[in-house]
Structure formats: structure tokens, C-alpha cells
Length: 255
Picture 1 (cartoon, rainbow, N blue to C red):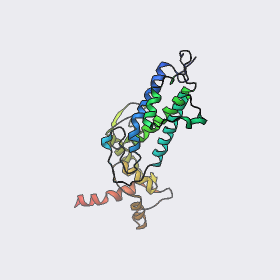
Picture 2 (spheres, one colour):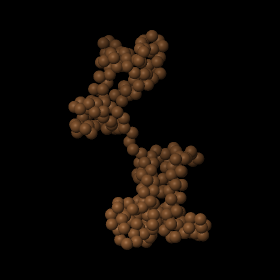
Picture 3 (cartoon, rainbow, N blue to C red):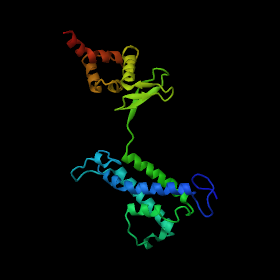
Picture 4 (cartoon, helix red, strand yellow):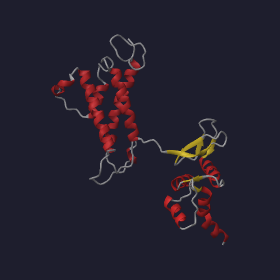
């Protein structure tokens, strides 16, 4: 018989091979460890603490809750209890006959150590469902760092992305390592030294913000209303906005 997860040969009567059984049990135990941080993340005013509780800043109750996290906890709880009943042979229609009242953490631990974890007929299906829930829990507890485009690679012109705190960036195509600020300034130079580069007020504001220059969309439209900034058919010229933005600094330096 083949493993329902990796398709390798298994022992007779087993739906999962030994390796996949250990991985399945490990995922269940990891989810049991994440139950408390997940409940802490219900508070919408908390900064993400994830697996580092010292990063969590508690707020004064009552505070709003994150409904997406609440839904995720409910899905995890329902799946864990369904798996528990499946392992114990309790019919889904007769679940009220199960008098046990363990919490979610205890249920996950019980499933991980159950002797029938690898022999139940649909173990592979439950493994895929649990793995998907584990990925969603990790995303909630440790949100991926927001990355945005900062400019193109100097060597191969591939668009590069970086996080807010990244000082260096490596091109995924040619492998060239470059300073993030240099890439940003090079992009700004390309935009501002070419009169044909145009964009909306929002686009220009975002592009300048990436390079470290702050100018709001409202400021750009105000400049237009006061007659300081011309608007073309395809938007504002980056170079015109740049000259207005640095103009006061240049005046001060001359004086």
C-alpha cells in the first residue's frame, strides 16, 4: 500500500509511512503550542507577537477582537475534534456520545499521540487539512514582512523588492548584491531626469516615499491648483514635482 501523502510504500494497514506519520504528529504538537499565542492574537490592538511573546503589548480591555483569527481558531478546533472522533471510531452523527471535554490544546496533543494516527483510512486527507491550517496559523502569528519594489538591478534590469529595514538586496536573477538605498536613488534619478516620465499624484507620492522623499498626494494636487505644477494628459511629470519638492532646500542653501 502506498502512503497517501508521499506515495511511498507503507506497512500493511497503514495509510501513512513512518516519516509522514512523524511529520503529522509534529504538526499537531506545534499547533498545540500555538494555541495560546493564537488566543493572544485575538486582540486587535496587539502588535503581532507570534512565537516571541515578549513582543506582545497588552492593551486595556475591553478591546476589539480579530474576527479572522476567531474563525481560524474555530476551524482548527472543529478539525481537531473531528480527527479525534475519527481516530476513536465515533460516528460523526453520534458525536454527543463523547462525554470528554478536553480543550483544543489537549485535543491536538491527544491526536498526535493516538496509536491509530497512521492507520485511519483517510489520514492523508486530515494531514493535508492540518498542514493548511498550520500555514494559516503561522501567517497570523508571524506575518510576512511587507516588501515592495524599490528599483531595477544595475546589471540585468530585474525589478528588485526589499523590506523597510533591508539595507542590502540581492538580485534573484544574476545574484548581484546591491545597497538598497543606491537602488532607490537610481530609480528616483531615472524618473526625475526624464521629462517623459509621468504619473498620477498617488503614483508619484509612492515612488518618492520608497526613495525617502515625503510628498503627499494632496500636496501635489494643491500645487496644481495654485498654478505651480502643470498637469499633462498622462499625469504629472516626476521631474516637475521633484523640482518643487527640493526647491525650498536649494533656496536655503544658496542663502
